[in-house]
Image 1 (cartoon, rainbow, N blue to C red):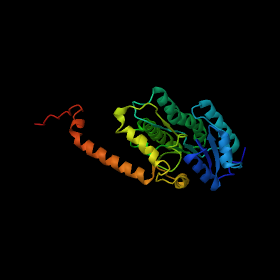
Image 2 (image 1 turned 60 degrees about the vertical axis):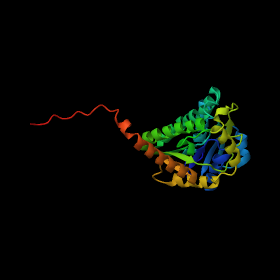
Image 3 (image 1 turned 30 degrees about the vertical axis):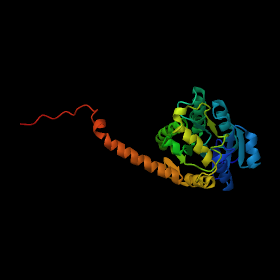
Image 4 (image 1 turned 90 degrees about the vertical axis):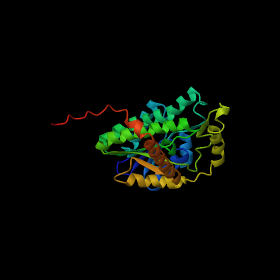
Length: 290
């Protein structure tokens, strides 16, 4: 086992073979940290990152709970601890909610939600024992505002947001930080076939909503405004903070989406406040004192 003091931080990154997972891995290694990089294909990790004493490349299908436990055990055997867990593994599903089959939805949730839980449950015992650590769950702009064409994907990220809020409340008293990172559109391969499933069923009634998103996704692919290298640097800054946030939105598109949703919710709540407030039991009026 490598000495606990050999590296400033030990990261574990899921889905590390490409996209932002790979960028985070590269940035952490470049600053002298060690990384347990995981992906379904461990050979792809070795090919990308090479052989490095600070790198432990492991095969991990996050939907396999037993494999997640073995990966964490191997990480602890090699480095003695895990300081930062980045739950990054996941993929998108494009299509209207009605267009997707039950099997497509189950597969999406198995990776994006249950897979995240498998890895978190495997890592947390060691973090709790040390009363130290930082869990970073990669959410999305779509975890704050759902949209036509990506509704099912967004629903998985809404689940990640809810889990992250609860974990934040449960783990803060134990000295463990938890953050949901909400990237907007970053210039990765997320909209490529390797990271985005597309429902084959197309219903004409959704041509003006989800159908338009199907077209737009091909047009913005590799033209996204976000720089994944800057995202990786933002995460390096995040983990150095003694008081990291519950949520970290990344990208001006995410910031604008949050502002727009807040404004919409405020307007709609004000419009329906009377009806909303009318559902309480009537308050008892105290008898007048004579």
